[in-house]
Image (cartoon, rainbow, N blue to C red):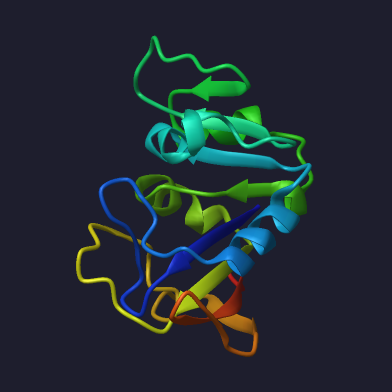
Length: 165
């Protein structure tokens, strides 16, 4: 299983349920990596998508504690463990954790790879954070892209591997 995230210098990933940065090249990378795969996400992350609709051409497994929640095109589960059970049998490289903060925290230890878009800026308004992979035991940088600048923001794709799995 993999996770994919955009994080600023302080590992911030969101504010009030929304993304911190608009990065078209990152969005293209996200789409190309996750297309035809399975994504695991929280309900608030789903609600942040246009129209609250699931991602097309992906199996969407949504974690929520709301027992009566239903959304067309989504498989609804009550916990991260239930999401893993629902995704059993999915090829490891086609299984993606895509947020939000609590879902990342719960499932990161089970991820083999983390595809992180690291923004060379800080978002002071952020209220949601990703674990600092540079300080977590077992996580090592595997690859770093050249810098990309879009919409006044410079960032790099930093791929991590979990050596503890």
